[in-house]
Image (cartoon, rainbow, N blue to C red; front, side, top):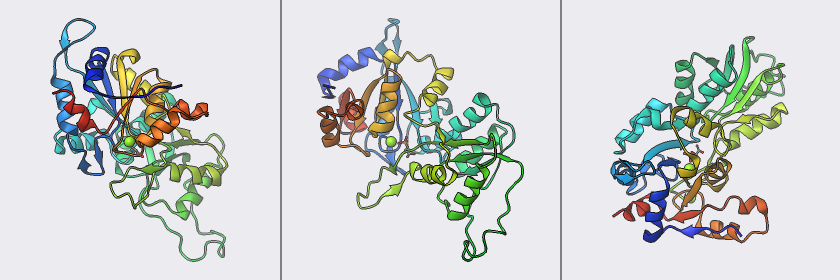
Length: 316
Ligand SMILES: O=C(O)COP(=O)(O)O
Ligand SMILES: [Mg+2]
């Protein structure tokens, strides 16, 4: 049976001696929208500054690296958000799916051409920074009964040879129609930034549809499957390994979503810790631990704790 333990003071010392790098999910771990989880900045700043004897036997702090499936912000926009919230951070430590989507297009696909971009300013900024031409952002709605006028007045851009679907608050039927039409083109590229079902919300009455709720309709309409880059895909970890000398055995992934954060950790051979401030609960974790379904057992983290702030208290 997959065993999961609640992180305690005793286990904390053992954990700190066994890791050099801490991968941290953002939404639901460090904050909800623009409201920080209590103690988050203090904990991360402390982990960075506390000197530990590492396995090279010299003193160093733990290296935090931020890994978010959220595609709404560029690295620079995230650096601004982190700094406003009191985190000490460099943009080079931030890996979001807007940045990783641009890296994938540019360096993995050597993409040239134009992208139909369903996303917000973060994706726009990263596309510009990486020299990738795009159209389609912002509101785009149907006028009148589209099935009556057979969409004759829909104009497609002849140069588009790829579609990127990220979180797009302007998602519409018209955009769905255009994306599916562009994906009809032979050899057109289809990328989804991530497939999270919902965003973690403080207001438990609300469901904020995640980007997965936007990628899947484009897949259905186009009858194609997107290449999704966010956690649990290993691609984001590959982007991190390009920039940091990360030893998977001495790295932990801390997240709030089992089927993205914890699964990424498992996929990459990392230690895993879940917090209960986002989409997962203690009941879900313990339920999965005893599940007969292999698919559920593989989502069980090594450790869990109420919040990143509670973890920080174990450092005192
Ligand atoms: O964008 C999302 O849906 C979740 O983002 P996260 O990976 O920071 O939790
Ligand atoms: Mg999260």
